[in-house]
Length: 153
Image 1 (tube, rainbow, N blue to C red):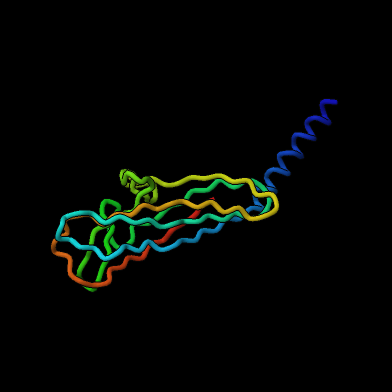
Image 2 (tube, rainbow, N blue to C red):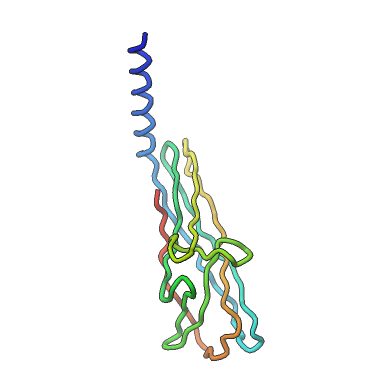
């Protein structure tokens, strides 16, 4: 009887491992778009975006979502219009205290877990973004940055 129990336990582990390999995850984003920024009042400008993680297949998926620093650094990401820049950042929380990054330099990542059985499962995460106030040297223009969002599972 002990042999049967050991064999059954080994088979269950093998099935669980095979299921984990049958799950895949992808990430998509809606861009963060600020309304026109007026630097003169010295106020920050806030907006939000969405990061969507979709997992499909069969099994459990544990994942981590990271965002690189783009053209600046995690302490102040930069958007550029030609040679002119605006400092901004992306946050995990609505209080603008947790910079969403790759887990280095004081940044945080987002972790998630989902079980997929038949249909794909999508989880949406809000990205809170803020242009720092008081950037009085800002020039008129269309500012942009390019970031890489990565899901590791």
